[in-house]
Length: 458
Image (tube, rainbow, N blue to C red; front, side, top):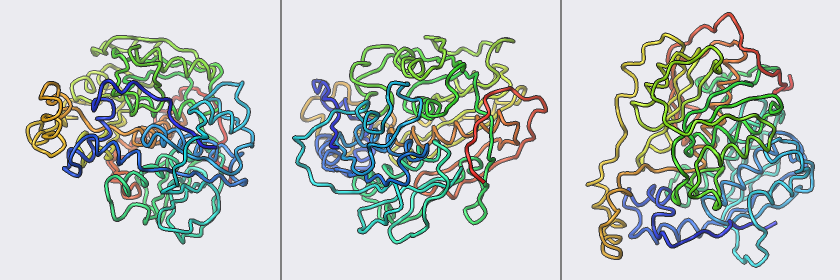
């Protein structure tokens, strides 16, 4: 099946894909934004789905995540293999029953496409046969990618989060290889424990067989990171009876559509809360919307015990963290061309001191960026109007949001399962198995309820 992205309104010019192209434009790797866009469109990924994985939750998560991200980033993708298998994730609602039907929810069939594949993502036990291939891999809570000639077969596929992380990391490897010209991309095996990302690869944490999924949540921030978190929440079989409060004050901009895994062309100009809520409601969640910024209002007795914060700037993150929720899980990524794949996580409990956290705004050096060739060419072609705004914006990639989202949701499960938590850790998607960690905290004695899920077979 060959899929293409639904065409968008290109009247906004370089703004439309600016936050993706910035990854190479800000580093001076292309002469113009148009050249950056052409480099993205030159990638054509073939996703090969093995029959032994297609019907597992991890396999389903990997296929739809990798395909969705390829459409967002490269605008075309081909999916071959066992796509006639059943599809049981809740993300597209009960009417979608096969993997093929699920793929039709995220792109349009394009039989006129004559592109030849430049890369392959293998989702199964077939070994990659050339240097442009990468293989998704998982075993329970463990997930990532394995390079060519790494023969370790797939393990337990019970955990959809593992498939989502693996699919996102595979697309990241293709992007890094072709777009960022990384010599290490596609040549390194990278495996992480979603349950305990700070554990070392030679002794990774297995994670529990059964765990408690959160059924009452508050999600603040619905940019590319917040949508990645939502994508993973939607994949879990905990939808019916679950409630989520979504908070964001912004509309979907034309520049947000290529970087957000959930939003589509029809969402441009509409509030992010309402666009994301449609996905949750289709999957069976009950939603409440707050279409304004969080100003630090104190958590009330009936509010969810856990808030997930996916905001960019330090000041609002401190306000949310200090609002008195039993737990605040805060995730943030870098903004510049060299840091956009770096993820920092904080798990903060009620009463923790947050005054010294997030002191760096991560604001880009706009003047230095404007001196790069792509910006000079844009000034020549379209004038300087709006260029400082583009230069000052952060790099954003949907595969970063999807990968980080799986990690964040795994940590919400850890909290709801009354496990110990790590106060902070940091990892880089280029080497996710080399995370740094902070203090380990004991859990609260009282649990928060939730829904018991089997996410690993012993």
